[in-house]
Image: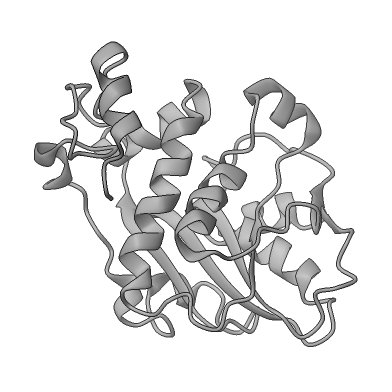
Length: 232
């Protein structure tokens, strides 16, 4: 990512810190320092967007054009610290920066070709007020900045939040979110190829629930993108 004059100027007064180790970033570094970047476990799912562990989550459940995640997610790692900072420590700037990063990496592999727009996974109103932002919308903003794709924030609404799914199995997760999303404003999205975007995927239950709602749109095609893929 090219470093702007303003980024260099702001770094003089409010130095940016590595999301992994907290070390001060140089002007050329973004999100992670050079050392932490070496430890980020990239998935390389974008090398085969039709047959990879993430795409297989939806086989037989939902027609999928392509699917990819940038890195593997494991607790107590650099990427775990990054995602926790975004979700729980008021770092919306990191969400948008990661959106730019994943878009820059996947654009070179043609991942976004033919996609018409981005649908971020929504938060419930209570959860969004508590956090102050929807991290998926901010990640989408970063992707949009690089790709030029429009963002459709009002297509889906999350009506309920059933709590953490950390200790649930795949079936329980699917049941937990199966009725949590509602399709709202989709009048102009017929025959579009939509990219459904989330921060992390584990069993695919949230993306599946959202995708099933979007499939009600006539002629819609779906692809999936996340920052993290939970390593089993």
